[in-house]
Image (tube, rainbow, N blue to C red; front, side, top):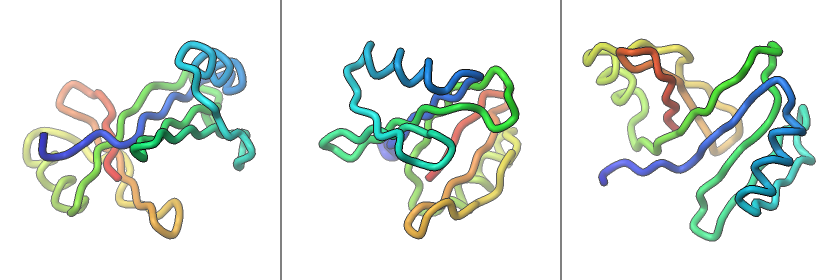
Length: 112
């Protein structure tokens, strides 16, 4: 596999309940001492999981993020193949830039 999934995010109406559920089901040790009560877990390989409330109170979703060495090219390729950019490249931390696109059927995918 050329590009690897490196992060999965679960958001919903009740972030603390989702954090409790996933941490107990998968025995994840979530750090919830982050802005907005967002919880993060990291395994020994560097794979991360994030769980928290939606910002707008919506039902939420599950999104997987794929590493891209050239995220702008990945977004262009997604659009050329019938996808739609939902969130342009956005720096969320000094070392982390993300973007979101929808596939032709509307499934949301993140790149990082």
